[in-house]
Image (cartoon, rainbow, N blue to C red):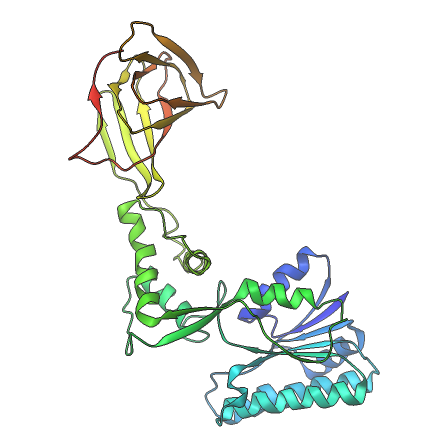
Length: 366
């Protein structure tokens, strides 16, 4: 379809258009830099309208009416003059029932579209969005989530006046999915909502975002226990400064090579990177309960095992040319030997974090 998207360069517009393009729709983008004649031409040619353009933080309160109510009326006039009965989605707000300039302007836009539906025999779908968040939202404009993600990623102050205040959040991907579901135009005219939302206090939101930043210092996995945490972390990452996508790991180096912890989790254990120099043997110990997985990704070597109460040595040749995971069973003494002429790099997963008070690592040669 040819889909007219107003507010194409805005937060919701960018997210909607990015998904529409994956479905091979033709996008007719309209934004503040476009003229009314361009809007008219697009209204004449489109098969569907997603009306996202609006004003929510103007310098002059009169801009609420111009950017919300008047623009919607212009769009409706163009559709009716063209005899275009295509469906229309409207991005409204829960503020539409509030007695303020912004709310009244959004309510006027809603009423305009409902009248259009009746007079033009067109389906219109009105979304009263709650507190939206996600990638491409503008800091200090669209949402507190965007502002705090931006500030925390840059070590800027985050101010919380009412830490116990609750915020009902709606993730942008859920918004886009809901809109995509009604693109067939078969849904009936009326009010729609994104049913999936999450509630969090302002203090919890701040602490969660700060914890994401701190994972770089602790190597801990970001909290992914709930869908809200997953969505917030995805959002936080999108606000990283361009020069802070990467970070250094603490690397322990000696004459044998090096060792660095990559990711750690109280529940899922830890992943480490082990580098062995040519001819070096590492390991030479056994675990009572702790268990590991070895994956050599570069170099050539052998992993040797011996049951603590046996003299039989079991050997597993390993090479970065064949990615093969080797389990390290409990009760088996094991060693990792570099047989090549270059450094051997091994990814190691352990099912628990290293505990200096209870390391469960018992010295013994294979």
